[in-house]
Length: 109
Image (cartoon, rainbow, N blue to C red; front, side):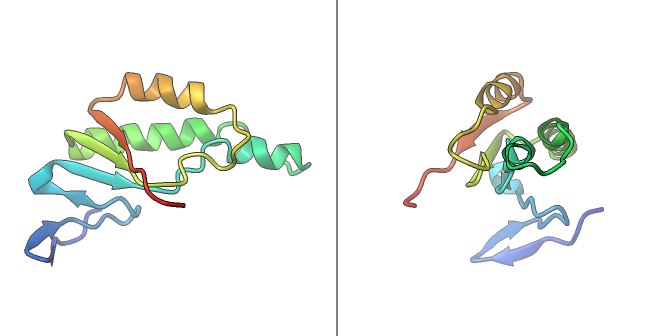
């Protein structure tokens, strides 16, 4: 399910219903708000959430990489849910095997 391309400042972008815009000319897929470690964070507070949250998120990213075949995946923010997170290793292993370059956007808090 894709939407029609839009023109923004002379550039064609392809907004995706999953909030992952594609910039075809740059072969760039942009995502944010992955919140890896979210389920573990809430479980520490007593909430009952399945442990598969991170796996599902990374599987979805794999699907998008396969669908759009970008040269670069740009992750803009909220990669992890909290500062006390144990998901870095999982993400690092995933990123090392990703089908494209993975870039983390850095900005001011």
